[in-house]
Amino acid sequence: MNVIETAIPGLLIIEPKIFGDARGFFTELHQTSRYAECGIATTFVQDNLSRSARNVLRGLHIQNPRPQGKLVSVLKGAVLDVALDVRVGSPTFGQHVKVELTDENRRQIWIPRGFAHGFHVLSESADFFYKCDDFYSPKDELVVQWDDPALAIDWGVTSPELSQRDRSGRRLSELTAALPQFHVPSRV
Image 1 (cartoon, rainbow, N blue to C red):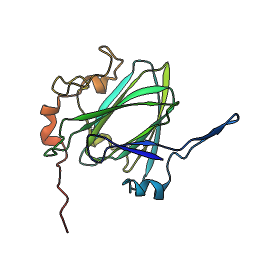
Image 2: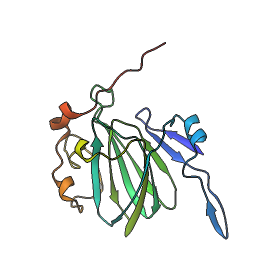
Image 3: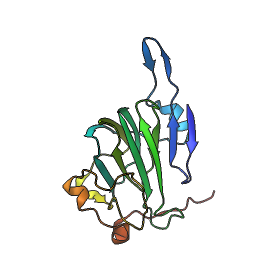
Image 4: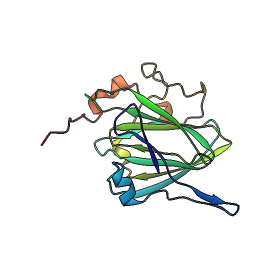
């Protein structure tokens, strides 16, 4: 597999190996030891699958104090996926990475704990699959406003379909007190 480091350390784009012929293809969506070698050494406890129609935007979501790391991919369709660093004190706080995930490119993105996440559906519909390293906790969920002007995220859309929860997202600057703190790893 090919691992692409992004401008934000720890946020990785994964291109799994695909073995295909006239009959179809095979790929590993996750293999513990191989992913650990790439820096994704976590135990996944929950797998989720969502289907969304064209122009749906979900996000930007984060849980705190029970943050989740997520390994995300698209099984069918195409999305523009966005990960936003919301770790207060991080040198990349407020910065984001965008990547197009499709059933054609089979890319994945590893979103570590401390990042808000969202996606916009580019195809007629999309089946979005993600593995989480902690359980969903509705009481700990925060929603960052998808079009917060301070973030300057170009979603490629001005009027997406949003849930009520996502319409009520708050600007990042309004959520700072509720967000995770960035901790510099200690040297041994």
